[in-house]
Image (tube, rainbow, N blue to C red; front, side, top):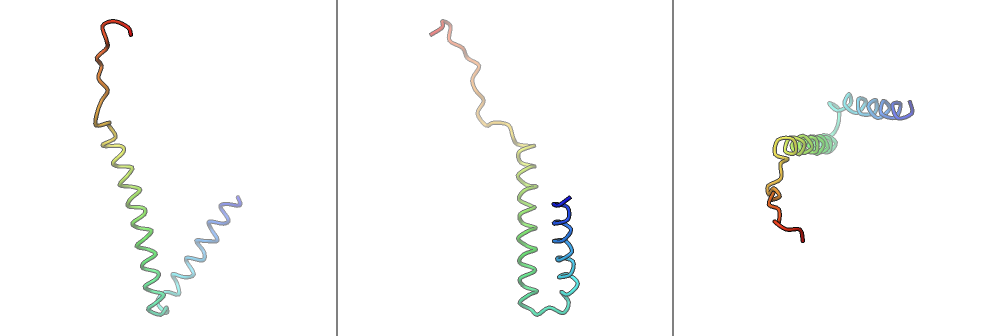
Length: 72
């Protein structure tokens, strides 16, 4: 339950910041949008990498199935 309370506390702080955003100065608005852009880019890269691994996860070079005729 401790982790849940921490997450709820962080979300409450973010919600308070979002409510005060219309009265914020331009510097705070710019910093907020840069932070949102960073988080969105990070999430997009995670989704992109998961999609790439699921769809294109096959190895490029498959091992040859050729066996020697006599054991070495």
